[in-house]
Length: 460
Image (cartoon, rainbow, N blue to C red; front, side, top):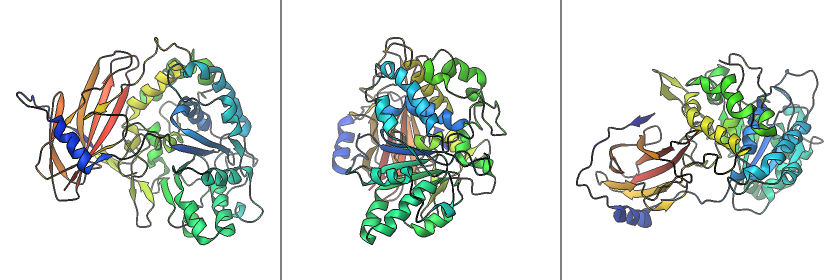
């Protein structure tokens, strides 16, 4: 759990920014580059309306990704519907609504794809599901598209967010394994990363025996209670008033244009405190969203998409963080709800407001390095490391509040931190230990928006 550290007034302290930057040059830098992550999603849209909810939110963040595919898999959860179908038409409907607000969205941020481009990414998967639907004769438009996207010449991995079932991905992997050499098959596996919500088609164990070594995050409760899965932190635990009908109507559904109007005002899942917002699939792409908190290579660090620990098979499963005296996987998502809901509301405002009327997130500079990338620093144990947020700005001129935190859930050792306008971190541990510090910057706009920067200090 992030622990708010005691704030100490640092009188007569010289913040040695040059020394820290020099340590970055010698032993650190940034963990990942600023290139957009590539994203392909499979969705069982057409069952529980929460898939449409997640799609509304995703389209508002379409500028943050290189969108690679929107695959309509078998609609609904197993047994939920009377017929086996896929509903790509629902995705097209939502893209049409997005197209009507895209011009306004583009006033606020660069990179929003055209509706025409998104329409071309919509593919239909297999209306059947599970192991019997994988093998010869089961290739689909969706499974072929997954292969095509992963094969595209690009140094960036293809991130696959599974909202519904894994059947189309399993078919793509089957085809590659059976048609290519072992070396080419392994190269294909190395080009993809998977985040799976709930093992909906119930073929996860079989897939792992068929394709060992695949980078795989499984967001599913390991204690047998399906309600304890991390993804349910979207609507359970924490401040659930942020999922209420009143909140959704005010900030998303009403007076926010045709896309917000498509946000369903009821889901089928119970219990749900308000019965409105669920968005159980949203953590799958939150995990790949660059926001300064996490990078996908390290699911154990945590972020809006949850936090995950590697099991004996090398698969990442729900991690547990302490909340209200108990360990909870849901809290690894729910803890961030105030920030990600305000961010959602701001982007919905972008659909209908001018740049001058809307709010935009702060832009962080840490030890002279602008951007969202994780900053890495090497330091000796008990050697003070000076950090600074000098140069951080708010694009709207709002006042900013800064907080430096030690992230103990991601750290492998302890540290002492003193904060004011800057932070002095004294790492304590053995060589190879890591101290994670998170700089959180919040503006005072409406709604209040939060930006993050993660600093990883490795003890030499």
